[in-house]
Length: 476
Ligand code: ADP
Image (cartoon, rainbow, N blue to C red; front, side):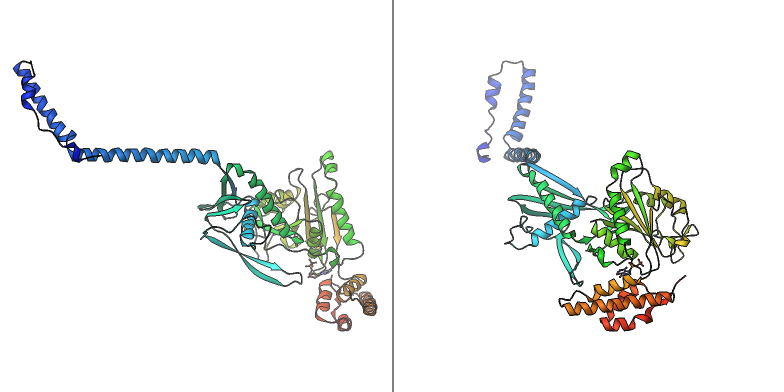
């Protein structure tokens, strides 16, 4: 735009008057019009400021059109070329994905499995604390940095991906009171197949981390959430029950698991209830956990005295337990004393006895449901609770029998390479068995938990010496 070249030319009045053949009035009017148009011309057309403004406006309009065109084409391109995957924190894949990202971003560069590379200029990190249990039983606390809310970039299998983690702060999940979170991963359309690959890898990593581990869940509102880190599975044989008892329960559960079709064909709800009763410290809880571990099941621990738990929530929880899990209700006698649900501190929750029975019966769905209940006082239980259909197998897990005492002793002190040492342990184990038999004749018993405590604190000889003092009068 050349502003200087737009200088106004002087008006040529003689030319206008001389060239016109109009009457004088119209000539005057015409002259007026000529004057005003020349004025407008002078003011607008020939005014350098106006021309400059007009030029600038043109540039502005041009830029706006260009910008809108750009926005439009970017959106169109994004729609055509990019593909996004959204995962929210209600889905299990959410945790898996974050853990996978953290794992890969932190693994050594030489690692062949290193597909995701470190986040680029990621300033928003969150910390996750994990307790890692070692095989010798000790544990250490680990901090893992995961991508915090914000935008992150990573490369997976040669493709760049943008990951956006967003947290909804204005609303919470109704029952768990956790904020809603979403992760959106975006990449080029041609790489969309990588999403399923990535998710499968994240799932495998999560499941690998759980291998040999038992997950315990507790109720969070109407949802089941893992309680602490997965713990190491306890071998089933390490819980020493009386002869044949462990096998009996294990076989019953396995038979039930193989009879899904049988139940479906007969229209019977596919559920089974177990009651393990007996004195405290006899291994009821330990056994249920070990059995769940051996079948690769999880445990859903239900506390009927929990505040805020009502009949409806209980029903929902029992009907919506995660697949492959045992529901464990401990000390069920304490929960329903005289049909009124009372907590240890006298708190009465709103779960009613009839509500509990209804929840146990549940709706006749095809979903598998295995419930384990434990009690130290079977005599206190209402007969309605232990009728078949609610409790299908009831097992007494008692104090240490002579055989159990001997087996536990051998488990603690045996295992030596040397044959002579083994023989000594075997001989002493026999002695433990005899001692236990004698004491039992006198009506005195010892719990397996007390025996375990004795064996942990003493060497074999001292344990055998101290054993008789630990027997107590049979409880009534
Ligand atoms: P309960 O549920 O019957 O009260 P637990 O399972 O809580 O008993 O056992 C308490 C402790 O005693 C656990 O550490 C467990 O290892 C040990 N214990 C109890 N019974 C046995 C058993 N039969 N075999 C091995 N250990 C046992």
